[in-house]
Image (cartoon, rainbow, N blue to C red):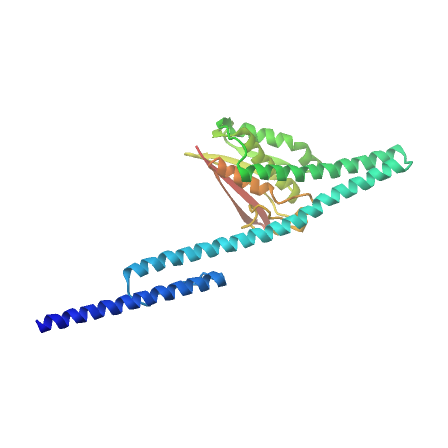
Length: 300
């Protein structure tokens, strides 16, 4: 009987001690969590008392800390990009407006010959066209971000869409003494997609090549099994961050001088993903020359 009592007391003592240690562990974890919150740290919280339940809890907490810290870093990155974009775009919007107003003032307050007047009008039209491109980019981005557009899916000949887009920019490339080459073994490749979105995807990629490369833009279309692969390849004129070119506000001072908001390729990525496709970019070196290769893949 005495032995049973002693064993019972020992068990109770062990249980009480263990519960005390568990309570102490809970307070320590709570304290460390508060410190992590104040320090905005994602350092893991380690277990000091053996407990399967606490171990599972700490695993979930540590995963959450990593996730929260990753989101915080991403928000900071987005905020920095947004601030830079606002500064850049403010400059880009102001420049064509200021220039246009300056030439308009000259036209209305000075007696100038017809030839000079036409030259000034041409400059004004060019500046206002750049402004229009900027504003359209913002409007299109707003639709993409808010999802404020209905996607009507239909059976489309993707080769026909590409040929129409190439024809649209034929004269622009011709004036730069450049060409667009479409390489495909198929005359018709059908895809369930949206005509307007697909057109904007191809237009933006062609415009990107027109503004930021020289030489021939090569567009290759392949159909393999249940996939359609469309590759845009052009010479790289300037260094780029290949991992960031699809980010919503990625641009450079060189890009901005040509009226580029850095939104074109981001819109391309968003539209492709909404059409259940994928897109990736890589920098390829051939004969000591770097090329940008953007590949789009759609499942059929």
